[in-house]
Image 1 (cartoon, rainbow, N blue to C red):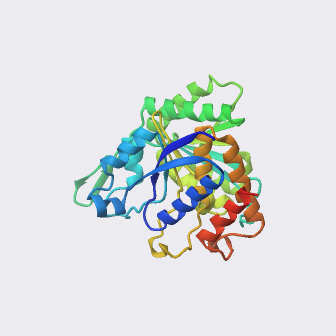
Image 2: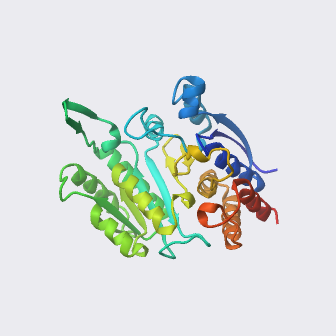
Image 3: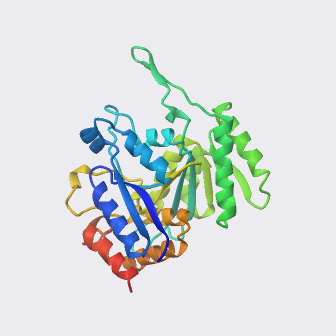
Length: 335
C-alpha cells in the first residue's frame, strides 16, 4: 500500500466541478491514494457561505499544504475582485510556475516548444493600490520590492538548477520604469551571479513578445514580474495550442495550489463539453511536488497516448466529452 494524502479540493465555478472530478479520477486511476477535502471559493462560495473566500477554505489549504483548484469566476471591470489574486496574496503563494510544452494532436504554429514561465505573484500593479484622484482620473501604484524580487529570482534559478534548465531570461521594462523594473533587475543579477552554470540574460518585455512569436525555441525559463507574467504566460500557451492544455501552480513557503489557468465557462457548465487536460496536467505537477514521480510520469504518458489516438474534446478538434476523455486516460493508465 502506497502513501496516502489528505489534500484540499477547490472545484471552482462553471465547468470547474467537471474538470476537477476528471482530474481526481485520473489521479485515483494512477494508484495515488488521496482523501480530498472539498471547499468552496468564488461565486459558489459567495452563494453558499456569503463570502468569496471563506475562512474554512483557507484553513483547509493551510492545514493540508497542497490544493488542487478548478477555475473560479472573476467579473471584468465590476463586481468582486479576483479570487485568484486574493488567494495568492493571503497565502503568500509568491511564485506562479507555468510549464509550456507541445502535446500531440493539438494544432499549433510551433513544435518542440519547451519553456517555463516563472511569475512573481504578490505585488506589482496587482497589489491593488489604486484610487480615483479626481473624477475622471484614476491612479494605480506599481509596487516592486527587493524582498519579493530576490525571492522570485531565487525560485527561478533553483527551479532551473533542479530541472536541468540551461538559461534564465529576466523580462522587464527598465528602459522606461527605471526605478521599479530597475530594482527587479538588480535583484535578478545578484541571484544570477550565484549560479554561474546557468546562462542569464535580460530582455525588454515588448521585445520578449516579438521574440516569442518569431522563435519560442530560443527560450528556456522566463522570469518576470506579476503583470508581465500574467500576459506572457497566456501568450506562451497560445504557442502550443491554447490555455486548455497548459497547467499551472502557485507556490509559497507554506503551501501550494495547483490550478488550470483557463476560465470557468459558466455557459457550458454541466454539459460535458469541458476539456480537463490543463487541470489533469496541473495534477501531474502536484504529484511531482508531493514526490509521486512515477504516478506523475504515467499520467503524463497516458495523456500523450490518448491524444495520439485522436481522442480529445471538441475544443481540440475531437468529438468526445469530458467524461469519455478522462475515462480514456484512466483506461490507458490501467493497461
